[in-house]
Length: 231
Ligand SMILES: [Fe+2]
View 1 (cartoon, rainbow, N blue to C red):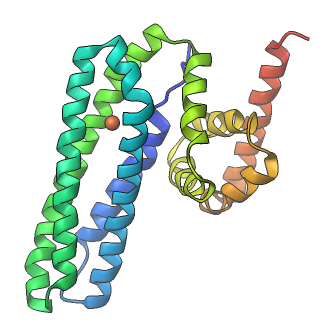
View 2: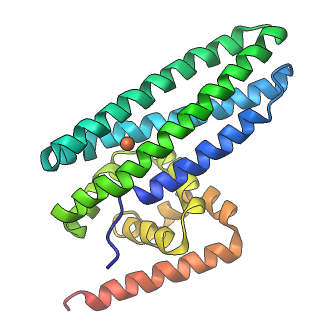
View 3: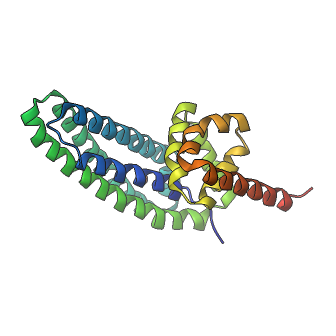
């Protein structure tokens, strides 16, 4: 039986963002002011999503893990401290790159590339730990209704423009079933016209064919739910 996965889809979006950003930084010629600005903008965007993600986990999911599995909580908390420390180091490098002259920028750009790659590696390992070990704990102790309520609490706390950004990240990075699940659960609490607005960029990235398939999958999920519901 497929369980509601709080981590998987959002982590797929974050991994796509991390890999794309790492590739962008790697091909950047830091002697070029223009390329440097574009790379720093990409790094700041990735930072923004990573920070928001850890905040939501710390605020809404980690207290549940702390209650159910204190040892795993300690491991995940140590992971969060480690990646946050790396992110802060990255912020300082970004500031130095911004203030540097062309020659100095090349050396700092190399450092930025190295540290960003390390951040990607740490995040990938950390996210895998959550997807396997934390999900195992959540699935053993909570029903899908409780997990959906937790997801709803997180989604409900995100301002609309930020939520649109998350959907732009997650929907193109997930498979059809996951994408349809996200939208079907959202459609129970968010009006269709708002979902249309929030998904405009994701729709464009997925393309008309992929989006038509998504809409059909959402409809069949909602249909299956209403059949399962008592009259
Ligand atoms: Fe985490």
